[in-house]
Length: 499
Image 1: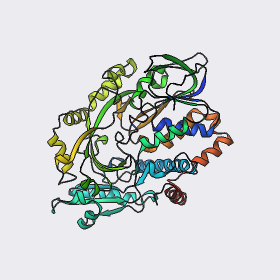
Image 2: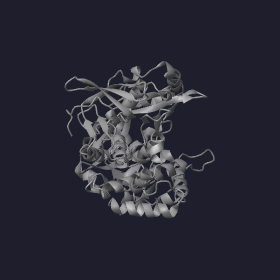
Image 3: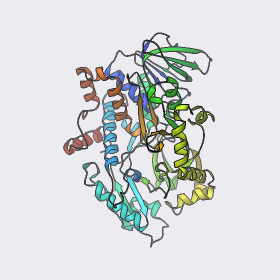
Image 4: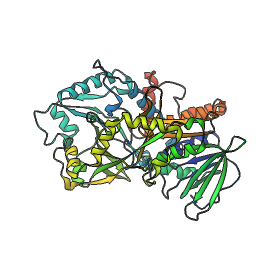
């Protein structure tokens, strides 16, 4: 990687803005689909994947809907809605197919460099929550993605699964948990850096760190001119390109707005910061080996779902609890305090005001989180780990998220907690907005982008053949075809060392 390499003023095929997992995935896919393609990649920081994709900044590290209760809401009649869980589980299986392709084609030397097997669990207490979790398990296990999900209210069984969580807990408290042995922990920061290292060594690919994209303008011929500033030398350059992808995390919205495309109108952003309690006691860390998700407090947003989370970061086992939310006007962890104010435009004022009016519960929640004392944070941790001691944990900053605000015919505007790909009508520019489940579904998100933006090429026999090499189930439904799903999961588990 040469961050001082001269950026050509002549036209290139593709510009990728932001060196996170989304750009890395798209870059590899495009280079596989069209080996002679020219790609320029720009990252504003001096480190790759340092914003949303890095392990300590990424809240999920393997969203597959096994344990995340916010993906399975309870309907008014008491039944459980599982459609979103099925969709996310399918997307994660597709991501694993692509990661298996990366292993088989020497992009990654060992799967253990970025993915390991970690059980996924849900844990609740209280009679109503226990009833809900049992219904959830019964509903999910009717679908083949979730067969093998265990449920237990037996305290001895729970002590085997989650000793830290059960230790010191009131014996009269009604508790239950579900257990999925095939859960994973994915280090997207490591995977991103591995992919960019391989990608940047290929002909026609240039990766530039410490380069800030200042503007994006459409030219008369329909192509794009990207203005880039070298943060080290101060030099500004203009790069002409046929296609632009804005995968800049929280920085995607301002850049999308600068493009001026009609599809960007009405979009706004609501920035939310996050923090973790990180365990520093090795004896405690050794006793927990699972991603354990609970239920968000009544009135709390989906992003507030607490979890006691085992992770492998840079080869070392870590234990985190959180996330604790906060509010910042920055759109990026290392952004400007003016980011939110600069994003306010005439075309998105109404959606922003509407969300501000109708999301008072979120505002109150964020205020309460900001005002939390160390004792308050410890109390939240002790709900999950009753014997937790303050001296074993330190507070660390997580990533910055920008939740999507968009137009809504009934209310004027609404707040979205997912991800959304915004693409121009001609498919020459596309941006990814939002957060969770994000990285875990990066592969199907990028496939959707390819289908929108490269409509002619993607139907060609050459691209179709290559797509099926990368994603063998491409064009088929894993959620509807149980035999295909089982065969796919068996194959990817073996290649990724998860069996």
